[in-house]
Image 1: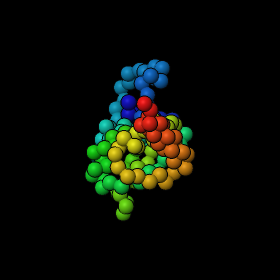
Image 2 (image 1 turned 180 degrees about the vertical axis):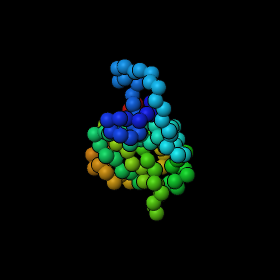
Image 3 (image 1 turned 60 degrees about the horizontal axis):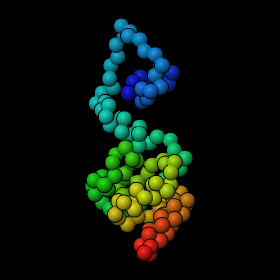
Image 4 (image 1 turned 60 degrees about the vertical axis):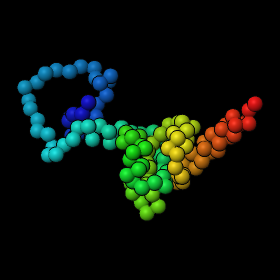
Length: 132
């Protein structure tokens, strides 16, 4: 849920499972001009805190990256070599599987531990291919 946070004096996204009580009041509020609630929620999810700050260059045009990467997964920025994907993630092994599933060349800029996760995944795939 998106609402005004009196404690932080600004817009904030609230998880409904953490709301302990609510009361109806007479007061009203004015939405900020051109406010898009859905865009705010998607951006908030895409930039949620996570253990690892991730930056990966997807060697794709931005339009194609937008078709492959849901907006809530992270942010996408057009750069000269393709599209920069930024997110915060807790599970690098899961992220490695996701990135490989995008089916495009990519370059891990950070964290270096994501390269290790990709190497582990490559070993798993190679072992699977060799199994008889």
